[in-house]
Structure formats: structure tokens, C-alpha cells
Length: 397
Length: 72
Ligand code: HEM
Ligand code: SF4
Image (tube, protein in one colour):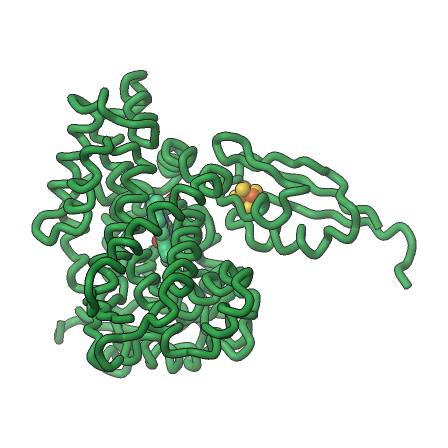
């Protein structure tokens, strides 16, 4: 890059991505970025200069702006971590559904999968999610500690609930769980399985989102591939982040005993506590856009065609929006946090995510009052990446 | 004071914040699209309705208020 003429001194720009040092807090460098400005410049790992947006109101404004694109094929679309570079070349329609699709196509796709995820449909799942949660807790309590809470509880629970929402046949739930957390070629295997369910396996489908998609295929509204890519978007977009938010919430609450005591005394606070944990932990990463018209945000002119990295975890810690932003306070109202995004791509699975977290955390701490870490907190393995998470969460009781 | 609400179903993404927060004023149909139950809610609903409009990710809810008499 030495021969490139730029007007910026790239070496002086802060570099992205940054890593979390402490599992509960966004990377420390995000604060320095916000101090430089809500909208400022940074360079990506490969040296590309980009806009980096860290103020609450600026992030919200950009997410709500119709003058942005999410198209990965745009040459200036920031690639926030090296692993995502392959997305641009793959040309695979699978990962592009919803999240990487602009209107008007986006609106059509969103309508095709919304019906099973509306607030009322999800609220009606409460008894079912509670029952499944209890089953996994019973199983866990029947084993001898220490156990990995992610392996025995969070992962299988989250995948089972999604599998049921999709209408995966009863006999296949375990297979679906295995595919969800498969390390090698997970996307290809899951895509193959979804296509099978939408074609030869159609008659085995239970009531749920896939059967509805299969119906749309039969009516010629969608191709099988489109239907599978929408199913895949639901499978890929939300499970890892829900599992990680659950795991980190457990770690945080075990560490912040007074907050947990408050919840034990007043369990009706759990929904607010989950909202606050979502704000505080803010695992959302990799939120990128390109401007399609000149935008003026927080006094900065972002020109059409320029790439932006939106740091939602930084926005959720903005003192202009949340008092004592770096403190976990389950009594506050954290609604309005940006952990589920904002604008037309705002998380379609948010009611499901919230309900799963609320039910699972409450049941876990109520049924196992003696729950504690099986290793010192600094020995809990972490995973840096687009979504920060835990490698394992060894617990005993 | 009168509150007049309008919703734009075409802008609604079915995010459901409105029905979650103020179910006596907003509902959603089977496709998740907002349905206005009460177009002119009581003024004590204003804070909740404002919060819903603020949370709506695609500005599908607008609020007009008319001050009929000065509040004390
Ligand atoms: C704690 C849990 C979750 C968090 C923090 C989360 C976060 C997010 C965020 C930030 C976005 C917007 C991304 C952007 O604007 O670029 C998003 C979109 C999305 N999420 Fe979630 N999510 C969660 C759970 C789920 C679940 C359980 C599902 C599955 C049902 C899901 C499915 C999706 C889909 C399909 C999109 C794309 C929506 C669109 O582009 O219109 N998410 N999520
Ligand atoms: S909050 Fe907005 S997008 Fe969500 S259901 Fe209500 S009107 Fe629709």
C-alpha cells in the first residue's frame, strides 16, 4: 500500500477490530474512539480507512437512514474481521438473505418469515419454552458437576426452540441441534438439510415457519433455494448470539451478587434485567453499512459510497443516553438500547431472544440457588470474533 | 389535551414494540403489522405512547397533540 496517495495518515488512525479484555465490557478502545468523536475515522485490519460511529444518537440515525446499503458486494463495504472477507467473494445467496439484502427485496423477505416471530406468536410460546428449559435443567441436575453450562443447557435449549419454531420433525430435533453447532462446513450441511425438509421431507414438517415457506414454494412465490436461504438466515443469525448472551449473563450475575439478590427478592424484575444485560453486554458486532447519498451525522459529512462501521456496544455505553453507562443496574429501564439494531434490519428474532433469556436465566437461578463457577473467572475461556463469547462455562452447584 | 395517533402500516416492520408496550392502544395482525386500537387515547397514555413511537425502528407511529386548555 506504500505507493497509495491518501489524504490521511493511516498509521495514526485507531485500528479495528479491537478485542475485549474484560468479558463484561466492550473493548476499552471504543471509549477512546467515542472521545475522538461520535463519528470519526479508523482503519480496518487491512489498512482501509473507514468511518467509525460510536455515539448513540449517530448510530441510531445511520441505522434508520434510507440512504445506506447492506450489500456485501459493494466495494467499499467494510469487512470488520478478516474471517468475513470470504463473504464478498462467495456470491452465495444463503448468507445474503435479510441481513445483506436491501429494499425492496428485503421487505419481501422479511414478510415471508415474520409471521412466526411476531410479538404475540412468540409470547404464546412461553409455556413451551418453560417446559423445555425445565427438561434441560432436570437433565443437568441428574449429572454430577462440574458441567459446561453452554453444552448441557444453553446450546441445546436454544437450538431445540428454534427447531420447533421452524417445524422440524420431532424425530429430527437432535439432528438439527447437531447441525446447528457443527464445526465443519456447518452452512453447507444445514442448507442441505433445509432443502430436504422443503422438498422430499415436506410431509414430515410440523406446523411452523418451514411449512409456511414450503407452501409459498408450492404456490410459486419463492424458489426452494430462496426458501432455504430464508430458513438459513433464521438459523445463522440468532442462535450463537443468544447462547453467548445467556452464558455471559450467567457469568455477570454470578459476579454481581447484589444484582442477583435483587432479582431473587423481586423476580418480576427479570424482563427489565434481561433488557439491561442486553445493553450492558452488547455482543452485537460486525454492523456495517455504506452510504448511498451524502449524510451529515454529528457534524461530519459522510459521502455517498463511503463505508461505516457502527459500534453498537459503544453506543450502548454512551453517557449522553444512559446514566452511569458502565454500571450494570437491573432496576433501570434500558429500553432503547441498540443491541438488536434499529431501522429496517432490526432483529426479527428479538422477542424470541428476550423470552428465551428471561425464562432460562430465571429458571436457572431459581432452581439452582447454589450455582457457581467451577473455575476462577479468569480461567473461563473466551472467543473473540464478530460475536464475542465464551468457549465454555464450567459450573457446579 | 387531545392526542391523535396515526400509524403507517407500510412503514411497519412488525417489530412489535408498540403492542408490547401499550397493548391497550396498539395491536398487531397475524402478519405482525401494527393495528391502531385507539386513535385518540387518554392523555395519561402519552408517555407510554411516546416511548413506543421512539422505539419504533421505522418511524411508523406519529403523535399529534393539541393543547385545548393550558395545563396548570
Ligand atoms: C440476544 C439475541 C440476539 C441479538 C443480540 C440479535 C441481534 C441482531 C442485530 C443487531 C440485528 C441487526 C443487524 C444489522 O442491522 O446489521 C439482527 C438481525 C437479525 N436477527 Fe437477531 N439477534 C438475536 C437473536 C436472534 C434470534 C433468536 C433470531 C432467530 C429467530 C434472530 C434472527 C435475526 C435475523 C433473521 C436478522 C436479520 C433481520 C433483517 O435484516 O431484517 N436474531 N439481530
Ligand atoms: S413498533 Fe413500529 S414497526 Fe413495530 S409493530 Fe409497532 S409500528 Fe410496527
